Image 1 (cartoon, chains in turn yellow, blue):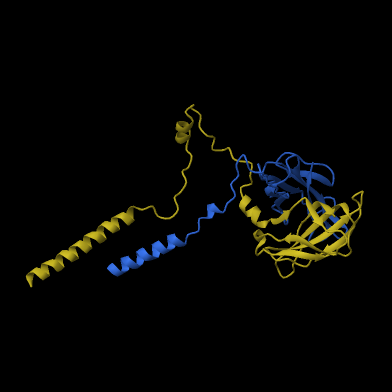
Image 2 (image 1 turned 120 degrees about the vertical axis):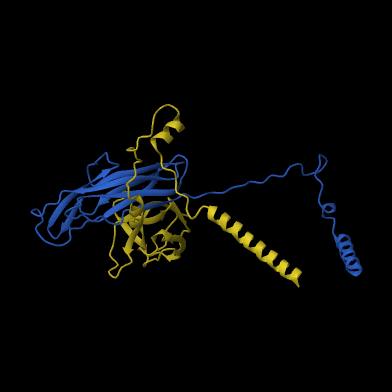
Length: 180
Length: 165
């Protein structure tokens, strides 16, 4: 009976010891994000070894709020050529609203065919609002094209995802339209 | 236990026995073979592509007459001898318009140049550079006295992107 009790106490003691050791180990682990080292004058001197310190006033040519700026911008994906089959109105394309615009902007796409002087254009296709992360794969041209290389522009107009769907600045993506 | 070992031995032996010697069917190519060479053309035409982020809008206030925005190009993959160019033009000739009243503004590129005209280059990314950016400072000299009307004075910018030789 006594022996059993002694064994029990030993087991309890071992468990307590184990918990203590585990607790100490966890306490020593780094918690969360490790903060990056700040450059100080001494650190710079020791790294460079030439007695010159990093100037704390020097900064990269980026706006301080570039991340905020990025959030406010519209991301547009582009390319420099597209190939269509001659004589067909239904064609395959990839008009894409990047996921970066999630929660911010719809995009519309207008395919414009320019004349030789690149002054006047006719609209071959206009899309509706495309949500971020979605593609338009097949479109119907206003008319089929003959074989040749044309100058075209994909006019991308963003709209804010607000009640007014107000327009923002826009982009013209110039492409070579190869029809064969 | 003994049974299990016996079953396992039988399964492994069967598996080896059923294995087909594939290389015995393969045609041997040596110097006496009729076909002395095998040629494969490997082609892949990678189209050019890129992503740009343009400033969506700029809002001036009485206290904020200079607004900074970034134009960024990323994942630029274009032909070796070409460059990605981004130009900007203004619908109203860099004037914010409210009916027949207007207020001028201008753009400073990378804290340095203020181009003339209504259509100018703001970013060039050469082939091989996967990204590029330009910092645009939009500057106006707001003066309530020059503004004929209350309300919004607006303009729209178009960023023209092309890949040129």
